[in-house]
Image (cartoon, rainbow, N blue to C red; front, side, top):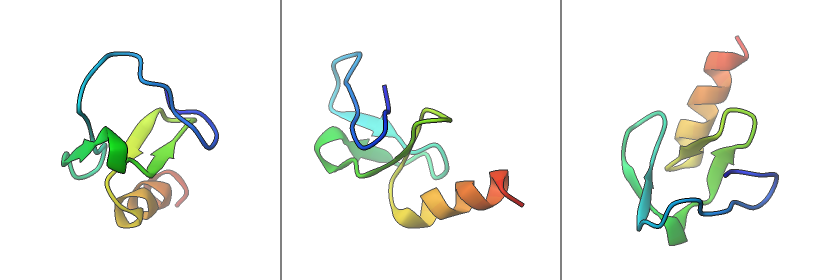
Length: 56
């Protein structure tokens, strides 16, 4: 579950999938996500791309 400034692992695993690029992101490397959309992003580039999609 992606919250504001923190996330909680609901299902054990080593990675999550980037919502934009579909790249595997190791849980320990996860830095970018959107709590409203419940999406993870590999880098700020993907996070910005998604933001631009939903905020034209």
